Image (cartoon, rainbow, N blue to C red; front, side, top):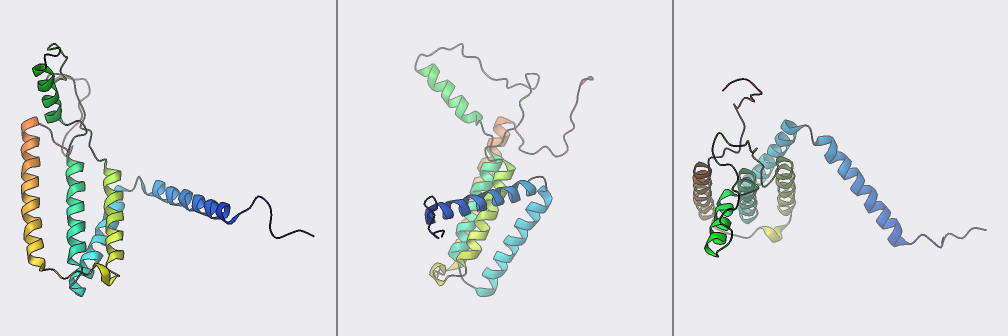
Length: 196
């Protein structure tokens, strides 16, 4: 007669196997969505519209909405910034020269005729989308609980967010102008060979 308690199978192992199976299925789903950029972003905007509709109709959870807006602003700024910040490189080079270091350190090309350097984002588009979607879903789930419905005077939050958005985007645009980079390639045409 076989015993129902097999020696190698414990509840921990079965839970771990179930979690591992769920992780594989989740990763497969994400892998299937990867090439569909427009559809991914449309679904995220639909989730954001659903969230905003929930906020407007319920007239509550303004703190959750404000937190989501700040987080999305942070993601947007990371998406617009280069991975290797030229202002930090300039500061490091100046510090090294001040400390008496090697002054003949080779500098990366900075003129138009120098070597081509593609724009590499600090936050790739995929991570931006995934983080924004997860944050929106978490915010939607937070609006189910009354714990997160903290009474606040929402116009102050809106004005503060608008001022914060304007100041940070102004600083980011000034950074783009100063270091001559554009985080988008809309309208650019690739030239291979040929004359200028």
